[in-house]
Image 1 (cartoon, helix red, strand yellow):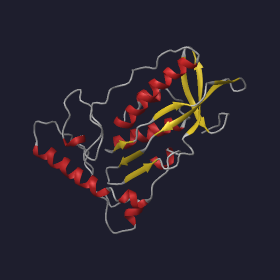
Image 2 (tube, helix red, strand yellow):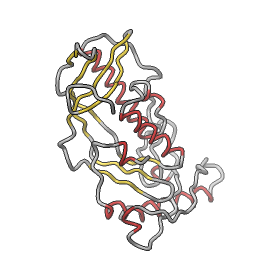
Image 3 (cartoon, one colour):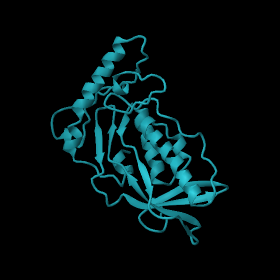
Image 4 (cartoon, rainbow, N blue to C red):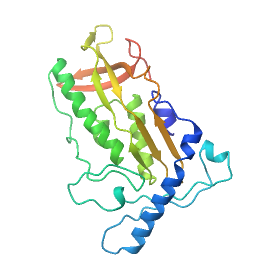
Length: 243
């Protein structure tokens, strides 16, 4: 399962845009490999991917094979402990601040819901940058689009891939509304994101940009039990539907 199938609100760019990035990643991967081979004390990672003839849609239109991509250190070197460094063509983000270990209890009111969402966004963006989605999964039900996205991210990082950019932020667009019929809450939100690149170890790059704003505003649906809020779905309508 690729990002195209789990990020239904994100518009995929043209194949030409995907292929134009492969040269950068090939060069970065080669430099990371050279650094790893030439150093015995820096602790350079040994995660490498074998070359593959599989290419993106645009690459398949030409005879150019996918490049070899080696996941190294963002910025070209290991960041000092405690220094955050965002992801780039060399490798994933480093020293990303960890979210809270467990969801906190909050009151069953608007303020409590907003606090939970703030905690979730931190865990959500941590998963995007590290591939460790165990924190974010605690805030969402397994049936949600978000949970499926986390499973994709975990697989991507386990394969040796990573994500460049791709972070999300959210803005409240309405007060929470309790649905007596479904016994759940809903709240209109707007998601803000600009660009995301998903790097596969075989050289395939999926680049997405938020060029269509029409689907950036939608409802999140929430359950509340024993002091804990949980995201149980999302959608354009006012009723929760199976995702």
